[in-house]
Length: 516
Image 1 (cartoon, rainbow, N blue to C red):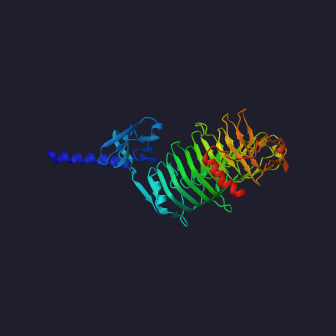
Image 2: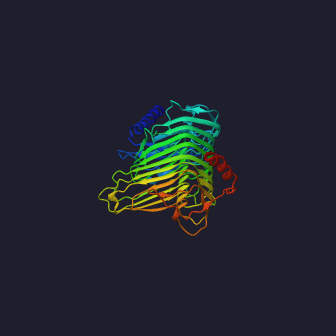
Image 3: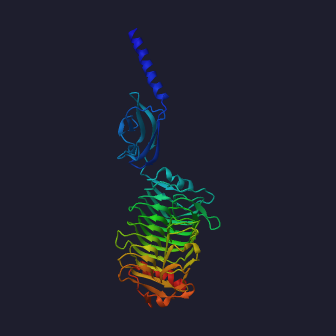
C-alpha cells in the first residue's frame, strides 16, 4: 500500500512539474544564426512578459545522445548576442536549448536543432540547385554545366556571408534578372572568406534603363557580389559580359557600386568586363563610390589583371539638399582606391569604358553651408595608393549648371584622365591615358573650383610618377581647350612601355585594333 501511495505521489509531483513547464509564458527564440562546418553562432531573444524567470538562464548545446557538448551561462544582456559553439563534429546534428530557472525549476523555454554542413563537393546543374546554396553557406560547389535563369525568380543565395568555394569550371550563368536592390546585391550577394573562380556571367540585369530599381537605404551593388568582406577571399578567372546595373538611391549613408563588386576587401585576379553598363541616379547626400570593376577598394585588397569595358553614367538629382556635404568618387576601374596595405596592391588594370557625370545637387534656397566634392578619373576617382601597369582609353564628360542657391556652398571638382585625386607618396608606374577620338569634356558653372588635367586632377607631394598621355590630347572646359595649362607628360611611342606581359599584351589586343 505504501509503495502504491508513493507511486501516486510521484505521479502527482511529475504532473505538477509538467504543468509548471507548460504554463510558463517565458519563451526564447534564435536569430542571426550562422551554421558553418564546425561552428554554430547565434543570438538569443528571451521574452518573459510575466517576469517568471527568477534565476539563471543557460544556453546548452546538446548532442544527439542527449549529453551536453557545451553550455553558456547568461549573466548580462550582452551574453545573449553572438554565442559561439566551435570545434564541433559536422557528422552530428546538434540541438540548442535555452534553460531558465522558474520557481527553482530549470525549464526549457526554447530550442532548435541544427545540422552542420558537409565538406563534400556539391555539384550544381540547375538554377534551383544554385539558389539552394543558401542552405550551406560554407559549402564547396562545382558548376557542371551552363545554367539559364530565364523565367526563374532570382534572389541571391547569400544575404549572409558565403565562406565556401564555387568553381564555375568556365561554364556560364546567364539571364539573371533582379527585381529589387538589397543591402548586398549581386549574383553571390555577400561573400566573406569564400573563393569564386572560373566563371562566365552573361546577361545579368540589376534593373533596366527603362525601369531602374529603387533603394532608400545603404547598399553595396555588383554583378558578381555586393560585398566581399575578408582579405582571405579570392575572385579569379571571371568574365562578366552583356550586363547592366540600373538603380536610384535615396540613401543618406552610402551607395557603393562596381561592375564586379560594390565593396571589395579581397584578392581579384584575371577578371574581364565586356559590354557592361552602370547607371546610378542619386537623390540624396549619401557617399557615392562607383567603379567599372570595384566601387570601394579597401586597405587589404589586391587587384591584378583587371580589364573593364564598363560604361558609367552617374546622375545627381538632389532632392531639396540643405546644409549637407556630398562626396562622389567615380573611376573607370575603381571609384575609391584605398588599398594601402600591400606594395603593388593594384597592378595590371585597364578601362576602355566611357564615364558620364551629370550634376544637379538640388540645393534649397535656405542653404548656408555645404561642401560638394566630386572626384572622377579614368583609372580611379579617388586614390590613396598607387597603380602599376595600367591604361585608360575612354571619354570623360562632366556637366553641372549653376544653382543660385549654392552661393554659400564650397564646390570642388577633381577630374583626371587617370586619377581624379591622388593622395599618396607612392609612385604610379607605367600608367597611361591612351586617346584616339576620345575626349575629356567638362561643363561647369563659374562658382565651381576645378582641378583637372589629362592625368591627375590633383595630387599631393612631389613624387615623380611614370604616367602620361599617348595619342590625341583633350582637355576641354566649357568647350574651350585647356591643354596649354596642362603639364601632363605626352608620350610619342609606347613600344615596350609596360613592364608586364599582361600590360603590353592587353594594350596591343584591346586598344590598338579598336583604334586602327
